[in-house]
Image (cartoon, rainbow, N blue to C red; front, side):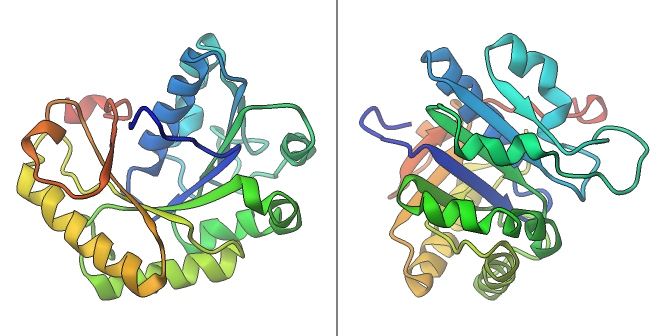
Length: 227
């Protein structure tokens, strides 16, 4: 992460399943908390029961991050509800509030519920579309543009930043990340998005030839069966 980067108060991460948005949300939350900033992570993923930020609640809270999630999340109840406490994050004092939003346009519908509040704080909000070009439905420019349009329509927020998080976990090679950057940059130009990041681990980023600003992360959501 560039030393001079200024992140707005509200960060909204959207993306398809396997994009790595939860990984990025966790890393940012822990980094902000380590810097002494008042940080809240809102798990708005009401669709996907796996690879969600709520799984790391104990670790996050121990680090000083407040975690909010849908009622009945991480249980066997099929339809979780969004508690009123989530709405209050727009009025309470904080330095950063990170929203980890559900996987596709269906998951983004939960985000649309808070559209009036985001409009009120639009100048201090970054809506971030996370792309992993090694995953189905985001492998091509056409796929990415279609996803962005669908998520934007349901989430009612648009896209301010894009993050190229192209990876195959431990099998990621520099050329994968470089190819992903090319696709994401092309889509950003067509969408009029001026801020593009490339995300990767500390051992991978130095081996890549990249033209975008970078965000170094640690893989925290690797299930035991992948280790």
